[in-house]
Image (cartoon, rainbow, N blue to C red; front, side, top):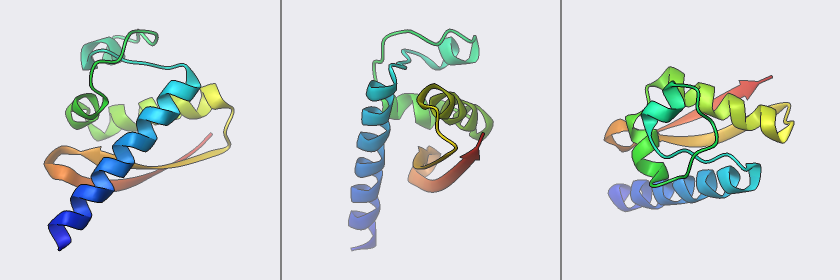
Length: 92
C-alpha cells in the first residue's frame, strides 16, 4: 500500500512539474544543457532530468521557474533519486 501511494505521488508530482514547465515556457532536453545555462531547449524526459539533477541544481531549476512565472513563493514536490520525494520551498 505504501509503495503504491509513493508511485502515485511520484507520478502526480512529475505531471505537475511538466505542466508548470510547459506553462512557463521553459523546457530542458539534457541535464548538461541546464548546467551549462542553456535555458530554452526541447524537453525529452522531465523525470530523467530531475532524477539526474543534484539537489542544488534542482533548486536552481525551480528558482528559474519561479522567476519566469513572477512568483513570490514556489512549492513543488520534487522527485529525486531513489524515488524519495522532497518538498522544495523557494522564496524569491
